[in-house]
Length: 178
Image (cartoon, rainbow, N blue to C red; front, side):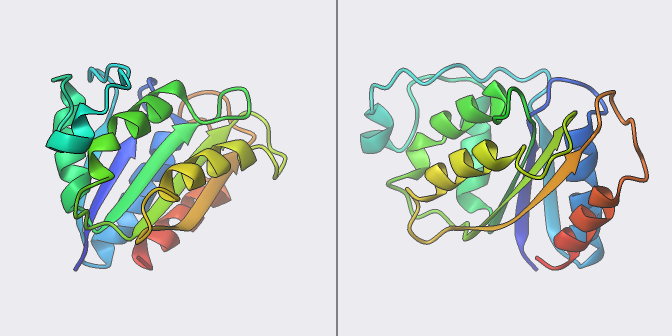
């Protein structure tokens, strides 16, 4: 059994990227894993100040909801990030969270596998490439971690717009295979 932290970064309730995250969680739970699902909606995650105190203290000087998420990420075996694609890139909410996870860099983090789930109005296969690249850049700072998989749900705009989109089943299967 693995400890899986899933973070949905969309500000919209019932968003398409959150639907992917819930499908992944369903698959992971069915496989017997422990799943902690967190939505950033309603949480306060302030911008990193770039002071690097976290490199010494392994804790950020900013005390907001990122503190708890960082502790959860430290102990998780698997991290899953779900984001809408905004202007061909990850959401600002995800980028801000990744920056605030800086205290993890010098730590003895548990995670090895990182997954990215993305959704966008555009449906071309290249749409999530910059978001994937951005997350890979973050992962590159963690030598024991890797991008284990990514699912893209394209051609969706409205919240929960397509409950039968094939990407939902792909995310469910990915969650089962963790």
